Length: 377
Image (cartoon, rainbow, N blue to C red; front, side):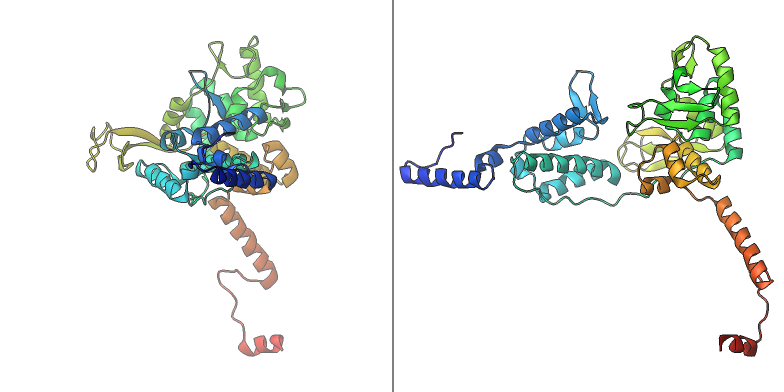
């Protein structure tokens, strides 16, 4: 490595060389590498790690270039930055810039996590000494939607016939939508009533078995007879179903499980729910507005499946093996408590109190103060 000493004196150059050699002896990369390392080099290191480890967030764009989800905003903001210039102040500027365009705290945190990983990899490769402080944002509470059985029946009647088996599979198994749509008939054992997910087809990459409930099992038998030559379970006109968001949203609105509204593309202000579109521009910032859907999403069926497993008395370890959750904390986030659960708990509590005290918990028996004192003594 060659570097200018910024001086015409030989002794100055020798002192700078000795300083660099001492740093190498201590296991620290020469200062030149710190000063010239760019954001693009940090990003390329992260891309290499994702490619080596086979991370699913690594995608291939239409131009054939590799990219990572949530990294594009970092590329735009920190383009041509030197690594030593990416400080807590510049990170704060990035956060403010993202918030100004309406990005959620969770979205911003995903980008910050990638940037922090870049610095950690650079330190491991001895290209950098320390990472700056990252001010992470408080995120919204996890989504808590689920589907009661009456709502499930109502939604299934509103969906097109070819989508009803997919809804039923999600409701009774709690599988992810991607796992359901990629199912092939070789993964289904209708005799023993199991779905066998192959290794590498699940989110965590591990194989798992999912039991088939009676109603779903009967529906899949009908699908097998109807599409006997198909490779995949769920097809339409011979082609595998890959997306059905519009049909889902419309059916959910008709079933009373969702609604359509309007939101400004710029300031993210909710405009209203009138039909047709109330105005072409936002009255606050004159930005263009768009139609958005609010309500039940398919992933809510996963929470429903986990909740049903727990309510059915399935041991937690077995329920986690069926749902594919590797950590208890994530599993608990899907175990949603509903109003009906609270009502059942209240009924059980009242029955218990009646057995113990001989009275309803809502109207306690009058107790003589002297009698109470004698019991305490």
